[in-house]
Image (cartoon, rainbow, N blue to C red):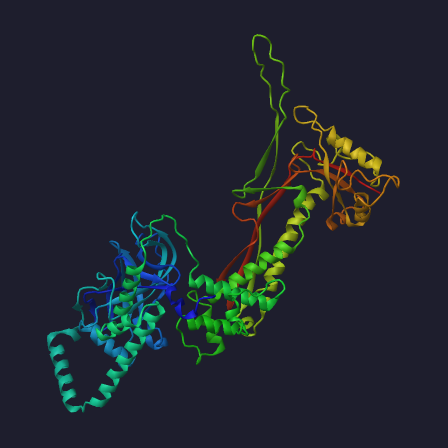
Length: 635
């Protein structure tokens, strides 16, 4: 069953800290802070359970681009405050002595809540910070014998810094408290305090309103603690004690994690199972739902995708992604919803990329690549010229005389070459296409591009046969000097098939030994395919009614027919015999290491208002041996 979207918030890891006051420029509202010190923080995943997490402070592991591009300063992570929850902006972030530091500037907008927060920071009341970080990769650093897993984040990115009441990292926070403005001198402070006292004397305090506000805060605290205890599967008595003890919501969350850890059995096995987290499950389910909307026959609706079957448009998917981020979208325009959904912290770009990748792969798999049975697949490490070494069969074994002397033999060698090349195209998914719910833009089009990649491979390989280019010996592939070209153009028949089979069997290697090659495939243009299929069929009788074709399945020399329309473009009559690639090399086709299919990359568009999809495919092919192929020009 798919995980509930309410618990997907754990993708944004939060590292809080108890801190000391910071240096403050009151006039500019600028403050320097420490936002992380490298401490270990307990965490709880709804799929993995409780564990410890440490953020690596190695500069190679920390992405600071977003922090230095104006990351927000939020009020307690601003879950439900929208833009009002943003207190300021980070002007500069850096790493120093194993700590994360930043300079932030707070807003000067006229807002009572913001003014209150700034006043408490200025006077040293609020001293706690919390960094919200996205974890891209982590590794297990658990020591032997420890029951609780410990992970080190080796690829992560700080997304925002918040002012919070309860910390977890005791070493992070504002730096030494200094007023750098004339507004902070003693006379100004005294005058300001006197004005505040006079103002309080002139105001009538609404006691009932204060009591109602306090009761509402207490009710919200109790409800939140009850919800978190129930979500963790703990008893109600745990929630009752936490509420009675007067702990904050943050302290209650830590207590829930501690309780869960204490109840876990000791793990004595060194084996671990890494499960898919809630974010991956959500993205995969949404991508599968969108693909099933496009074509349910090609992409049947999976069980986990059924939960989102009620979403009727791409705009609904955008809204779902924003809701899981805690962003209120009901008052936003369609354009603003799409704009926010396309941002890097949203799941929406990953969902689009996942759907497009699956569509691309399906198109690539479904398109015919008829060359694969008679060619050999290899991988290459780069785009340099790839040389294929051909070794001779070696000298024949010679009789050893009575003195036990062995004679030296020789092995001849030759080589052919080709190179892999990159092919690609960029596609665009505009904001208008998302609003208009254009499913073809990122499902059918990538599928078509996948099919085009397969056709491109077909064109390259069959082009090697059609063009009959030169090999390293300076002569064409099919030429009388190679013993692989019929001297007389003729139709497919017993006699002509036997000529080709004989020519292949008497081919000699580099060292002059007989190779005895047997043909395995009959390649024909579509124009001659009917004759070829009939001739190689067990139900067809090419000689007499009492015999079966020797080239049919089950016969002594079975042949598999491959009909390719690309051959018709050059010759509608020529046909070929080709050996099994397991017996002798003929044509090699190569992919770049680790990538045997087209690959799709995405980014939020800069030149276009939307997303860009780049389809890339690395492929190359070449004829490496002429002895395993024979050609008849046909009539």
